[in-house]
Image (cartoon, rainbow, N blue to C red; front, side, top):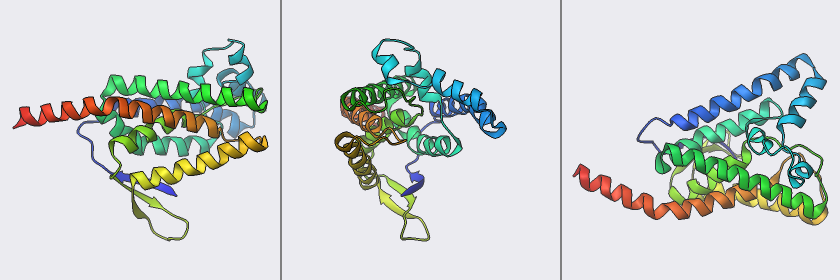
Length: 232
């Protein structure tokens, strides 16, 4: 499935979501330059200096890459896919959590994703020397919170057997997404596969998003009731 947008309006401009989009694009600028000019040395330097390398994190080295890896992307399709998901789902989660809390939430989910990936690399012995880059761990957390806050929201998406987009409830869309991630994550764990996608990072980020979503849900509901009472 390929999402186009959600049918779920927000109450205020998603300033933090837009800022995250801009930061990701700024980080991608030198990567894009390296790709279009064929500068393999620069590209390798960016991936290894900005990406998170599991064995370095286990040795408590290059801790800054916990942050820089979240804003670095490997190629154009990588950043387009991640930014599409951030644009579609991030604004609503920001609307619910509030701007400051959303930013904290975003980084916590990204860290959870990174630690999960490093843990699984250490258990399997696979990928310890390979840099991990991308915002997908944090964005997976956004999906986790989104399904808690808006399970009945409609997602307009393309599916393989339809020439035109259809509407799918968020709970079903995200359920399919999670099953896909989980199947591949288990394949990586049980078969020792080395793949280019950090599926366990997605699982870790998503579970963190679910946790924080349920943690904040009651407080969000009470604040909504207070706003409704004041407005009345």
